[in-house]
Length: 580
Picture 1 (cartoon, rainbow, N blue to C red):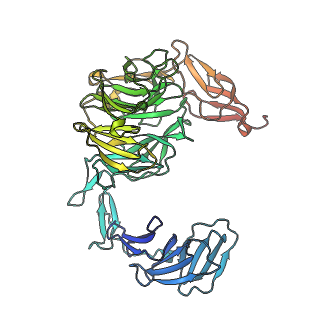
Picture 2: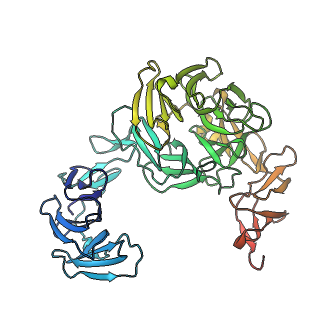
Picture 3: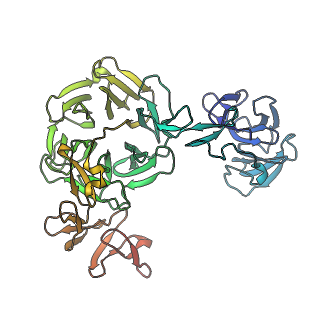
């Protein structure tokens, strides 16, 4: 009813703050005699804030504006490490992590101290459930006056403020229109945040921060679905990775592709194709470049380029960028398995792979689509270089003499280069017409992972944008703004646009996976049965009923006989009990 939001902040300057529910009128209400403000609760009937300090061991209250501060309880053996508070009528309840108890006392006098429960180990949050704590009152947002978000306001005359979701701005008439603004999506620690491209500009709010990113490696975005896609490693393993997706306006993250999605190996580097609506990724375990359709339920996947022993093939892709207007993929390759270190280029259908350059320890890569220039970095020696998309005109842009420690990620926009340097803990902007005057965007920021530039991507008239180019499964941008259709794993091309399932193929068990291979050209003829923990001893098929059967052993409770359809659906246990 008062339309205020309150919170505690430990930090270097511990305090209690409030702000209107529409983000206005922020102020500090308590910043003295406070150290570890843990618990916080409201007495809406008297408009008071109750708070507990787990370092100084007290419970105080004040009015919503910070005045009238009084102490309820201190120096009590009932109060050793208060963690969370709640209130009901005249009784205050709190949890104590050191006492392992839930306790209570009178909310004004602090007397009648009582142990409510002593049977809880490490009690944390506490809340009283009762309708009187959330009384019904008039709601100015009930009539849905806003196009996107209606926020209650303590100061606005109408009682609310209209806000737009990230990527949009409010017009004078209160509507929301898409905002053509560029910003940096930065992966820092376990978060993905938005940062302005302009030095010193602290404006945020273009992106709802994403938290819970474990061992993040790469990032990209899809403006059409307003989603972010990022790669997470597993226990600092840069090979066994998973691609996650989440709306950049907020929501729940979901697994897009990874070790549990029937992909042999795992995607380690990604690049989003906004014309064909595809996600390209590099698979370091299988030494392949692959593509997956992002729309639809089945998301067909195809291998574009594999390690066939030629110098132009792929071994261990480290970074990737694409130009869907010209139908090209560019990647840095660490080399190995007979393949040299290189900057590679290949058509999106996997044809015509070539070597653009062969630097030592290539790292990040990005492309200026308008100027047809590739920028890439190397680790040893530390350099940022450029090269034309045809492999000519290679030159060094920056090196250690420019205070570059490691350019782990690159981005380019409007003849301005951005690079992320985890060695010197900074994100830097460089005018390519004046490279001796770099501007630091972020500095003294530990655990910087990677970034990408969120911007309006060039759209052209392209056949893939119309009915998926009439392709059955995957529409790939090609040279001259044309398109090629391809089929996912388990299918073959029946004609230019149609796909058909393989009728005859070999099914092979490889201990940790089952794969199907065409008898003609060794292409993948079925969706692989893969994922962590498989120990597959035998495999057989029932052709007329369209089932594949296999035996799992040495998996404890997962020992047994299972079956699945060749398209990767309907996995079922056949026998799970009575097997050693």
